[in-house]
Image (cartoon, rainbow, N blue to C red; front, side, top):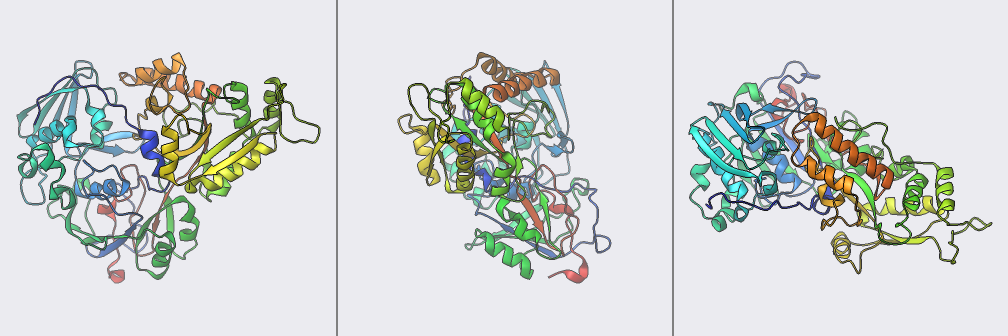
Length: 542
């Protein structure tokens, strides 16, 4: 493995890579103290069948960015920390930690009672091996940029590891909630190419509450309770969890209706179908992806901020949300309303046609007496092309109709997702307005750098504002909460006032839970992370 050296920070393509997130599911789990629910007290035993909407690329989230890998990985692996209630981080593999030297030094002290599923103890050596691999680009860790400033890792003893960073680790402990710790005794002797292609990633030996039994060719993944997993991290009631890949939503609804599955991860558009089944609960999951309209501010008519603000004011986001799904909700700012750094009063204009009319008139776009398309003094029509994928086609259609009410002429262009991304990446073919969906890579510290900072390759709006550039850069080094809040406030204010991106709707997915499965609540670590406290009454087991 390479020695540590100075590394250039890699800007992740969060917006482009996350554009498919509108179909995926986000987080849900119950804590160790989850309520028992109906059916008496929880007792061990039984098998739960859970359907996934897609096949994981692997079962190791170290090398796979897809949602399914992360969901299964929540049961197979034990990261150092994980999300807790109230946007906090809690001990998991690490029992404690200590920051030193202004967040340039970090010491983890590990639990001593966790074992790999082959019986070997989990040690600081495993943590050090994983961190070194994660910072070396040749090993393929999907979130390597999070640890770009890590200079050294030192094992002090079997339960203590020290980290040194070249500059303060602004993202804090959150980066370690996303990193699965890997077994050095199984992977440590592999060179980078052998590591990337190792069978391990498809049949991992983890240290989590469940172990892999089989991954069958039809897509079924079978997990069994890991004996000896510490009960204070989650009491494992279920003997087995069977994960079935059911990509067709109507099939998953039918399976839930007939009792073939006990829980399903469902996209936004099928939550109502699931909720209509007797005895089925649909629990909305946090970190909802959002749909946004990216406006190219370098091109007419969007080079005028008044036109961009008018477009936002002309939209009725509640109507758009209703067209997308019953559980869709309006979005009017970069941060969701429940985020600790969200500013409730900073919202893009919405459902205000009078304001839209005033702004467009002030910008020189006059509407003819018949109420048709607006024109400027040179006779040019107020028109543009709005592009999207089939997943956002309903939104594109509604936006077209809403903007026509105030005098915009919108031509729509709906294309296959891959073709849409190719067009976006080519400046000569890039549409002036594009609907894309994404979810933030991190819950506590979302990074807006990639698509708002001047000159970023993912800044498809062409937006440039020195205050935003400064705030986004500061977010990458700030560790003080007051400083963080101030920088997020700058970004929120500028995005709300300048409108390079129009925030439209948030699309929460759901975890549909059948009547046999008890003890299920939702939380931030992934829809399967709470499975250790799920249980099935003895009389209802398969």
